[in-house]
Length: 366
Image (cartoon, rainbow, N blue to C red):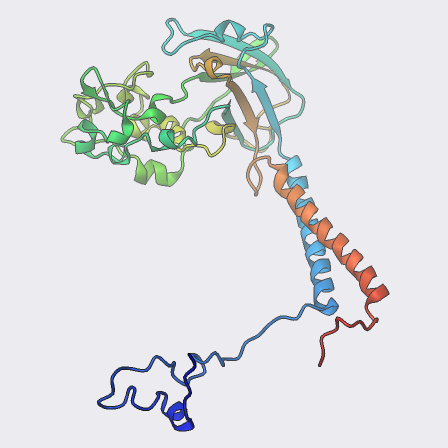
């Protein structure tokens, strides 16, 4: 039903008898303002050949050089990868393929390899796993952050999120949860072979975790003593661990919940194929490369079973650049987007040059 308002009503902002003193109710008519009457100034872009074509060409000219630079930088990163799962019958680690948790004695194997080119800068040693879904919802939730932060109450009373890895033998597990229970525990040692002599390569186990994780998120329980054995009294080790958490390292600043190997593992990966930092190989001086070209051997204490879920294990040696590790995808993506934009710019330029001056009935009237 239509309602008519006279000029006086519109000027007052309400109909007669409504909103006036003693009226029956308040008017629902919006105030006569630019905002409420939608009269504010607005800007709407009009896409023309003069604006679209330069945009395509500019994007192309910017993205293609950036992509080439990123791609070349990524290719300059040295990387060497060894798969030591042992599925191949000729692999030295094939004898360890069916190893189980806490096998006694542990299975060991040695893989010899050759570096054709030297690694000039600091080298990062990673371990890699495939077909391991750390991103599973229940797996990601299976932890107690309060316990890992050193809360004494949570130490003895783990969160229900840790089930079924919260207690064992009627004792609380520290650290609890499926993430901690499945911690990677292979041991990797690297040697350089010089005239049939094995020279050990120094592998630094500190500095591999994020500073915020090491100093903020992970803390050992507090108490009247610095003895971790006493602080973790009343708890038990995770089911798949060969030793309790307070025996992960002989150094006090890398033991317990603040052990860097443990911290690195607890930062879950987003994809089923991932790598995690294992050790650092620092360059000693500028006169020699960190790893010279030549023969090397990798000694592996094979503790971590992956054959049961068709997983694979790798050791990766890699340098880094200003953009991080080796990853050609970003450079390829920039080059692809830039090339597409430049190609579309050329196509639209040809179309505009051929048909742009024609007047059609679809033109917008003035």
